[in-house]
Amino acid sequence: MGITETYTEQELIDALKERDNLAYGYLYDNYSGALYSIILQIVQDSELASDILQEVFINIWRKIETYDPTKGRLFTWMLNIARNASIDTLRSKGYQNSQKNQGLPENVNMTSQVTQTNIDNIGLTKILAKLKPEHRVLIELAYFKGYTHEEIAQIEDIPLGTVKTRIRNALLQLKEYMQ
Amino acid sequence: MNVQEYILSGIVESYVLGLSGTEERAEFERMCAAHAEVRAARDAFERTLEKQLLSNAVAPPSNLKSKIIADIEIENEKRQGKKVVSLKQSPIVQAGWLRYVAAAAVILLVGSTILNFYFFTQYKQYISKYNELLATETQMASANQKLQTKLQEYDAMMSIMKDTAMAIVKMPANPGGPVPGIQTTVYWNTTSKDVYLLVNNLPTPTPGKQYQLWAIVDGKPVDAGIFDMQAGPMKMKNIPSAQAFAITLEPKGGSATPTMPIYVMGKTSS
Image (cartoon, rainbow over all chains, first blue to last red; front, top):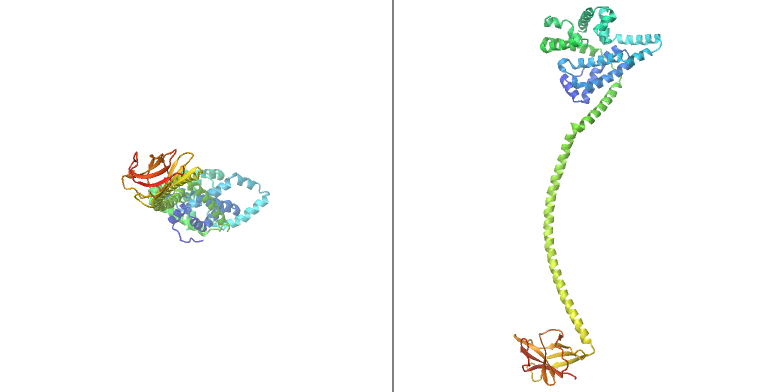
C-alpha cells in the first residue's frame, strides 16, 4: 500500500489538529493497514485486532494535540499507540478470562495454529524469523508481549544485563534486515 | 561513549519501538535535543520502520472505516457541543446576528425618522385644519345660538300676540304729519295692560334722535317709552288706560313732553 502524496507530514498534522475529517480519512486509508498488521501480530485475533484498530483511531483523533513532533514522526507515535493498546488488551482481565473460557486444549491449539500461519507471513514477524532464536524470543517477549527487561530476565532466567545487550543486538540486527 | 557509539548502541531502535524504560527515554530525548546526528539516526530508523510496515500492511475489515468515521463524527459533535457555547461558534454567530440586527436597526431608524417627519407635517396640517373647523363650528354655534334666541323671542312674541285679550291699534301716518304713508301698530293687552309696538314702516331717525311712543290719556300725552328700529314687536311701558297712541321724533333719550309734529297716531277702541 503506497502513500498518495496529498499531504506533507506537517500539513497532515495541522489538518488533524483542526479535526479535519478528510485528513482523518487520508490517515486511515494510508496507515490503517500497517497499524492493523502490528495489532494482529500482537493479539493474533482478527476480530479483536479490528476492535483495537477502531479504538486506536479514535484515540489518535482524541489525543492528536499531545503528539510532539520533536520526539519522532507521526507514524511512530501512532505505531506506539497501536502497540500499547494491543498489549493493554492482552493484559486486561477481560481478555485473560476469555482465554481461560476457550474450552478444550485441542480447540486452543487449533485456533492458534490457524492464526499463527497467517501471522507468520506478515510484517515484523517475517523479519523476526531471520533472527537467531535467542534474539527472536527476546524481541517477541519485549515487543509483542510487552514485558519489561526485568520481567524477561525472570521469565528466561538470564541476567538483566544480558537481556539488555541481547535485545539491543537483536534490534540492530532487525534494522539490518529491514534495509 | 561518544555520540557515534551511542547511536550504534541500539538505543535508537529501542526508543523508537517503545522498548526503552523511563530513564533511557529521558536520556535519549536529551541526546536528540543536543545532537543533530542522534536526531538524524532516529529519523532514519523511523523512516525505515515506517516503510517496512507500510509495505507489509494488512487490510483491515472493509466496514471498519465507516465505523470509525461515525465514531469520530459523534466525538466531533460532543466536542463542538462542549465548545460552541463557551469558545468558538457562539461569538461568531452572535457577531453575525448582531450585524444583521444593527443593519435592521439603522434601516428602521432612518425609516422611522422619515415617517416621523412626514407624520409631523401631516399633523401640523391637520391641526391647522382642525383649528379652522373649530372656529367655523364656534361661529356656526354662535349663529345658531342667535337664531335660537331670536326664534324663542318670536315664539314668545307669537304667544303674546295670540292672546285673545290682545287689542290691535293701527297707527297710520298723521294726515298733517312730516312723512306720508308710514305706519306702526300697537298691540295692547287689555288684561295685563302690556303694550307692544310693531314698526310697519318708519323712516330711520336722523343721528341723535329717537322715536318716542305716547299714550293719550284723557287728552294728555303719557310717556310709553322710547324705541330703536326693530323688525319685531317691542315691549313698551305698561299703560293702564288710553284713548289713543302717538309717536313723535325726540332727542336721543326721549323727552318729558312730546315735541311736535306727530308722525303716526291711532285711536283705541275704548
